Length: 85
Image (cartoon, rainbow, N blue to C red; front, side):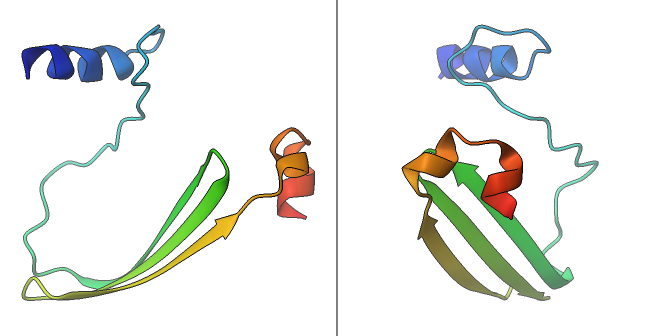
């Protein structure tokens, strides 16, 4: 456990050689469960593009609509403009 936490801390460093590179979330507090609204989460990594729409309904209730799309190999090495065109 301690080793994993150390790798996570290293992965958050500005210049890191950690295999667990991470981005800070900049959250200022934990959610209460009473939040309401829609959230879109996008994950583009490897060969898949994942899209999540999460509807927060308060009271700790939520609905998730998820999609997973394969990214063509030719786009993985192309300029970003081609991926989002």
